[in-house]
Length: 438
Image 1: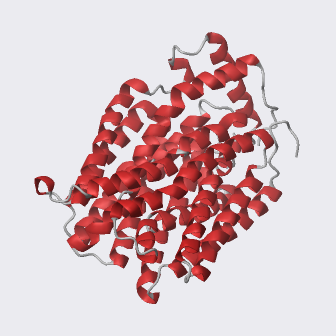
Image 2: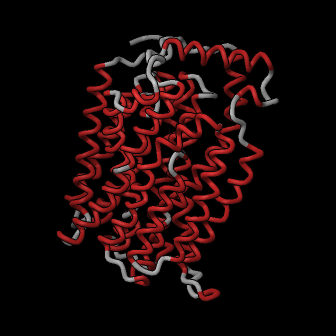
Image 3: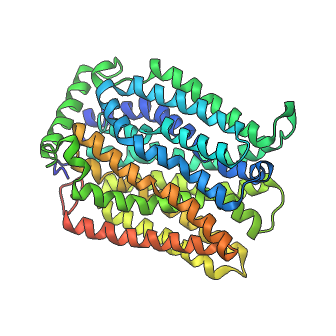
């Protein structure tokens, strides 16, 4: 981690403010659409599964197959972005994934559902790690957790807004001969394609390309990032050596634990709310499913600011993971009190969200350049395999044991194990606070 103390000069503050104002709303909107198009299948499942005749296990498998194509193409996609620039490559990703996301409305059974989900993962591969890498081109380390927090607030917001929106779209069932779940996929895919086209005009590749920073601000930002690069300790790593770096692999497993919780809950929360709380109206189900993510959006921003202010990203990440995991595991003992179980899911969702800002300070602290492109992609790719394992695992245990709760307990335990691993990794390589204190 860079030992460079935080710069609080007027030039530094003004540069951060204008970069954040210009870029973060756009990046957040892109990620909002990404997560919405990736997970709206959870709301669609409320009626789609019966319409096309797929079981709980088949749905869990199909929901998770997204991450197979995603995993295979993640690193190549991020290395291409590093070479050709974010503007062209991010536009390409958004346009293709938007088209495939809408094509989910064409699913007619298990095979077509599986195939489209794999294609969606291929189309979107490289988007998230590309955005994390892109943030390192614009934000120094002492402001990066805040930037990640604002950017990733799109995750809970996409669920908080997208779930009720999906519930409303399900009510279009039968309009123009389409089922409600088909309307959901098509309507939510269109904005992605439009924004993808607009990125060609709106997204700058690097600070030198913009006219909204003064020469002094550009110079300060260039010098600050260059200094951090020289102090990172990872400048000697090549892209290929970073793929097998022990610290990269350790962070990948920790991220697996976080994502295991994120998608284990995300894909199944509407179904669990509907069945355990006995709520029939799908709009009410989606509103209850959205509430944890409203609070999660606040938590992710607050924790991002906390990490930049006090440092200790490893410890803060570990605490959030442990709280979320223990809350989720505890829901198994609330079978006679469904609303207590719902509260456990609520706390877990908030804990998962609060894990992200501090976590993404860790790999960007020692990876730079092409090594960062490859290493960040590896962490995200391996971590997101949990997006395959989590939904399928919960679906499998739901069918085998007759209840989703034991799958959720196992996810909670994995998150707790991940929190222990974060602490061990933080002790191995102490993370310096912005003020330079250990």
